Length: 336
Image (cartoon, rainbow, N blue to C red; front, side, top):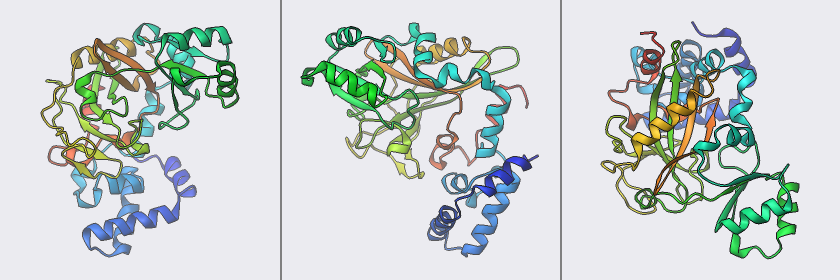
């Protein structure tokens, strides 16, 4: 049953202008009356806890009720987080310094927290790296990240104090990804997005397996113009075209022209095993989205998200027969 408290809170904070813009998009795609589209959008909001972005990106306007009910909507995703992730443990993955300390054996790179690291510590890190990545502790969507070539640094103390002043206090060694992945798109570190669910018995299931790729920028986040494709969990081979945040399909990468389908992901099995092991370290966070980079020598963790973004889950070009992922998630939790 829909969470009425959640629905009324969403209505109170609704961006009406954005909602009307989405109805216009659907009208352009379908030729239907905008009032009828808006009414159907509202029905999906109450019946399936779907936001207007869900309605457009998941193309719910083309789905019959039995298929709409299979989607992980915004409300369904919120419900999973509230049920499975203890708020007292969110900081374990939300704070990047805490995350790096907790999962240090999975990182395979040097890093510093400038809140506690000295100038001498920073100098040692810079000496060991050809490039560093500097970001705020609460950075999301690739925002606030700065990449610095260490050979270009002319005033180390000035940089150290500037980064602290700008609160870009998480400084990490740049990750050099596997050449087979760089061949698809070389300007960003393209990461596996692996979502884990832990059932009541403590078994960890990988319920979503994708690869995110940049597109014109140095980050691969969908909110920064990136795209995502699906990796077959049995074979570790990319099995679907890519899609961007609006659900537009890309059979080949627009930057390199490389085709997606049929390309194997190096060290995929090891990547899956990595997130399964890591998930068992935080049993109070049973629903996590992990970002994994694949290097020439194996996988490493970048970060985990205690509130996984559900928009990446159900692009139409990634689904079989228009069936969403809710049944898969329920099966992993032993609810089917």
